[in-house]
Amino acid sequence: MRIAYLDRTVHETDGEPKPNGDVSAISKSIDLQGSVETGDKTTIASKDFGGLYSIKPLALIKPAGSDDISRAIKAASRIPRMTVAARGNGHSINGQAMTNGGLVIDMRSTEENHFRLLNINGSFFIDVSGGALWENVLTRCVSRFGLAPRSWTDYLSLTVGGTLSNAGVSGQAFRYGPQISNVTELEIVTGKGDITVCSETRNPELFFGSLGGLGQFGIITRARVKLQPAPDMVRWIRVVYTEFDEFTRDAEFLVSRDDGESFDYVEGFVFCNNDDPVNGWPAVPLDPVHGFNPGIIPQTGASVLYCLEVAFHYQKVDHPSTVDKAVAGLLKRLRFVEGLKSQVDLSYVEFLLRVKRAEEQAKANGIWDAPHPWLNLFISKSNIVDFDQTVFKKMVKDGIGGPMLIYPLMRSKWDNRTSVALPDSEIFYLVALLPFVSRGPSVEESVAQNREIVEWCIKEGLDFKLYLPHYQSKEGWKRHFGDQWTRFVERKASFDPMAILAPGQNIFKRTHLS
Image (cartoon, rainbow, N blue to C red; front, side):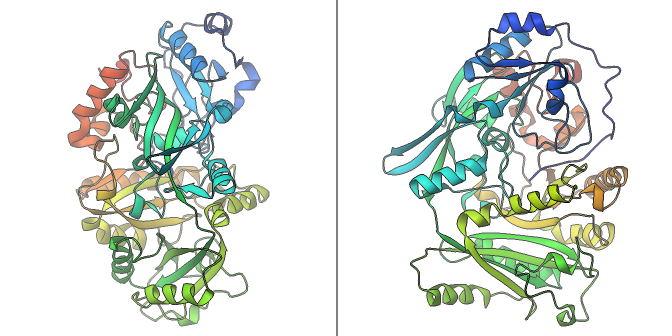
């Protein structure tokens, strides 16, 4: 999942101070094993998936490894007002992977530096590069070892370091926690340029600060990720609800069950009660042979409906009747509209890469590169009904030109020592509004709607947090972190007094907050 609440639609750069440096001097001082690219070759680093900003760096660094990253950061620290941004696969929304007139470090060039299976006291782990894509980690782990990481994001063309700097959530997080709860060791290049290995017992403040730390504590160059046996197959199921309270009751029931007593994956989304090809009935069926029958919808159905999306893992050796019985036993506990169920069986890897297929279709249709003014929030269970009544049933009842996700998570599965800010309740919801501008409202309309939603949440006193936050003021950040603010700032002061790391929107840039 990605972000955000936007304070402006055009990046204001005219009045910003420019660093006093030139590429030739930097290149000489760094002495890289990798390369430094300038001019037109930096174009890829001047934009991101959000497509909302265009910010030109001074240079694009393609490091050979951690030593190159360390040299680049140390060189930048000697130049007044120079900042450094780590760029994974460029899927930030509000320019977090960019820096104006600074150095962008292309982490993808380090993907092959680490890939090592470890057996530690009978448990399996994989050491992978911060610049590795999760989709490649998946396919290599499954094909070579029959193992897989425990927690994912819905879209896997993201880098390991990128998602660990935020949280990494998907339909498995209710059981195993986010990706940051499934890492035991990190190698980090700090804002001082130090290469540091950290874990729960070794440099723990840096370890927990960097997990969900928005890139403000350092650049993750290696991660040790927990593995488990990978299933062969997945039964992927969607069921439909007309009533929000029944949808949330079933979703919360499933995520609150013990391991082995629920589905292995639980998500959900809101869709319009019409035939809109993007946000309406056609968005629900998994089996293209069997379409959506709106005639089954009860007359009480409102302008929006709700889909619960679940998955059941199994092995090829499992007898079909065993799988059928287990799935039927879980479904009979749910209160969805009878007759509005869609399912398909596919391999575990195919299931996890399902968004990849949607990406390929979107690229073929020319809409993938459209701007993406996305908004992701964590909303407390105590406020989710009010959110539904105002946002889903009023503000976005006609759709947004993209998915509208909603599903519950368990706070107890998140380590409260990390830097992520969460709502207070044990059960909270991820809400993601993900428009593609080419087929929905304009950029300006989407940005205005995002602002209106967030301002409404603040005005009504909702217990909520932005996921992958984007604020332009100290007040915004202090409100976001709440009681964590002091700890977050102290961590930053401990590990990066020069404040040159840019990915988190310069939260601690001295000219910004001090």
